[in-house]
Image 1 (cartoon, rainbow, N blue to C red):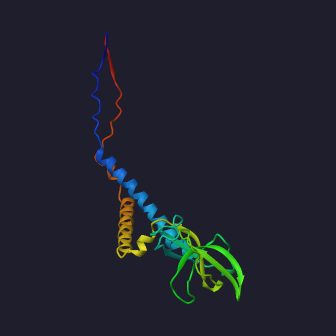
Image 2 (cartoon, rainbow, N blue to C red):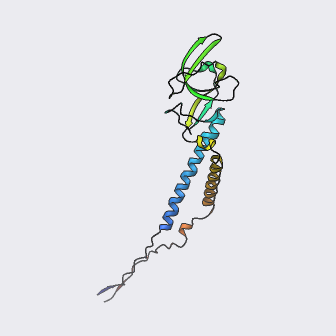
Amino acid sequence: MNATSPAEPAPATTSRPGRAARAAFGALTTLLLLGLVLLAGAVVVVPRVLGAVPLAVLSGSMEPTYSPGDLVVSRPVSGDDVAPGDVITFQPTSGDPTLVTHRVVRVYDGDGGRRLVTRGDANTADDAPLVAEQVMGKVAYRVPWAGFVTTTGWGPKAAGVVAVGLVVYGVGTLARPDRGEAGCSRPRRRRREGARGR
């Protein structure tokens, strides 16, 4: 007659909600850190490479192209190289540090040289004609909502705190061993032995 050993009990399964939550939190933190790095690149690194200036949009004169709170990056350009359709940053009054970002709608030759006529996309009236020397730059790209960080008093501080926190968490996660494996037992494979008798 053949006899087999008693069936071994199935290994106990344990739910790991804590481990799943840690993994989800880690993934979210990684995404936030990556987003922060990309934002820093778009707002700080790329403008430095282009020699451009990041400027916060304060009014709705360029909606829907740019909205208040957006950040536009304006790179230096000669007023002679500007064409209708370009969005430029200019001084409404020569020598005045105030800057306006509007679209060029017309270019013509007037007394004393080239003249540029601009208008906000949301406006119905043209601005006063500009001379080339008033043009400070041409918009290269925008970063939605990033202007709030530079225009609010708490924005830079909050961004700094979040950045430091995410970097510290990321470094700590990489430096420590995976605690998710601690206390987890893996079932050992056992060969089932059969007893054969006559």
